[in-house]
Amino acid sequence: MIFAAIPYLISFLCGLALVRLILKEYSSSLFLSGVLAAGTGLGISSHLTFLSFLVFNQLNRPFVIIIHIVVLAVLVLLDFINRKKQKIPVIDINQQRVLSLWPLGLFLFLSIPLWYQSNFYAHGGWDAWSTWNLKARFLYYGGEHWRDMFNPILWRSSPHYPLFLPLINVWGWCFQKSAALLIPTLTSFIFSLLSVGLLFTGLKRLTRSYYSLIPTIFLLTLPLFHKLSYSQYSDNVLGFYLLAGLVCLIFSGTEKNKGFAFLGGLFLGFLSFAKNEGLIAAVLIGGWALIYFLFFTEKNMRWILCKHLCIGAIIGGLPTLIFTLFYAPDNITFINALSSPNATLLPRVKMIFSFYLVEMTAPIWNLLVHTHILKFDILADPKWRGWWIALVIILILNWKRAFDKRTIIVPLFLASYMAIVTFYYFLNVYFEIGWWLQVTLHRILFAILPATLFWGFGSLWLDKEGDNS
Amino acid sequence: MFEKMIKNFCAQNLFPKIIIIVFILLIALNIYGLYGALKVVRQYKKIVDQQNIGFRFAGLDEFIKGERIIGFYTDMNLSQDRNSKDLAHAQYMLAPVIVDDTSVEYRYVLMFCKNPQNALKKMKEINAVPVRGNNQGVVLTERVNYR
Image (tube, rainbow over all chains, first blue to last red):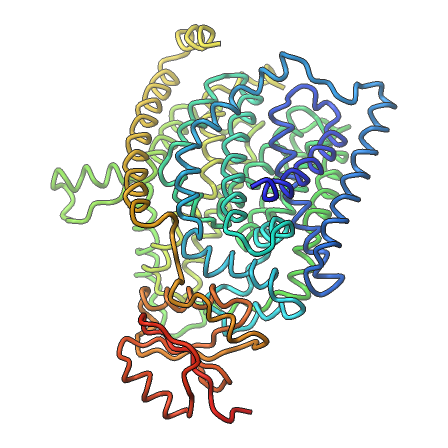
């Protein structure tokens, strides 16, 4: 267990040093800095592990460990010099700041059931053993033949998917004798806690309300959140970086903080390497953020924020670029509906929207079935606990704040992202649409769940314009 | 802090108050749902300590070291989820060796058959001998004189 914790600790320290260096004002929120540091650190580790495959064409454990130590040493040194220059104490821990971490204790306590289940389902769900952890095993055991994982024979394992999550697991295994099950379990558990922590601390910073605990505890106790967390899917990672990117870019605008813009860009880069949807999400968030900076921020900050966002995104997205250009095979699970003569388009559209309706309005659907207003026998699983209905009600009754310019990136992103995802469901006729929607739609929605909770609850307690910025 | 939260609650408008109450109830519902999920895991734990997948194919990797691809033959329909799950388990357990379900033109062929007669028939057809097998329908075979 101690050896399992070492790589995560190194990643966290790397991230912490970088976040301290970038945000500078980190003294204001230990919790937020900690969560962003862990997310940044894991991203750095994924990239550094990927570097081993670029340089040596295989996993070179000593190289990966040494490069981590070198990067950590350089970042700590830079942070030290920077703090000395600015006359800020290198370590600033007082009782009040430590006590402000009490929600972390609460979340850890509430996550015991999640750990209990994660520990039992140690192999994760179907996509864990058939895709993400399989890729990690190719990277770890494959030597110089690691690229065999791109072989079209393995079409069921989506060979074109990027490697962010498998690389983090491989980094974790660098301190193990074999590909221990504990590492993917821990990785997934950490990302779940990070999503929960970021939702709380992000909302708390935006609204200054301790009621931020409500959506956070709702998320942490949601059985579906547990299921998709112990399943060890990359959607968990996607959900965290999506929220992290949005939160940082919102704060960069509201607080005129170029450090947050850089971190936001970095997270978008990580997001693009997590999954193919992540690349689309990263481009959309980045695009909307640039428009937001150009039109809604003060003149003197516009270009600074845009520049920092772009630099962060380029650094974070470099592995995506290399992977896409030189390694990723073509997506062989795609047939264009528009050029396919046998594709039946209208029933497909009906099917897609029916799935959305049943998935997102399950309690209403079930009520209509129970009262025989709907002549169906099938009941929907109310796995979202009515969140999507609640969100719609919040948006209708609170629309002014929900579409406040400070958080406008979130609805713009969600609308454009869901439009593209829906269009892709329509366009790709490779899979039988009913089966495809059944196994993937809830995961798409799961990835945007923390961001929608942030948006919905943020709008409830958002101060009037100007009070909060 | 809780005092502050209660004061804050009283100061809220009706709509956020309703949302807070509704979500507290939903959290209670979540905890009830989690209790059910944990009970299921507890039941499983009475039989096995941990989820165990791919056990049918465990240990076979020892015999195919150095191979990059092996063949896979089954008498089951791989388009059904249940059967394709077994193929996924085999692939997961044997990685980084690729398990090719479309061909038997390899030195080693992994056979996974419901009916052992089908495996025997295929072995004769491709001139293969068993290397390792188990009572779960799995036989790792090696083709004689394969070049």
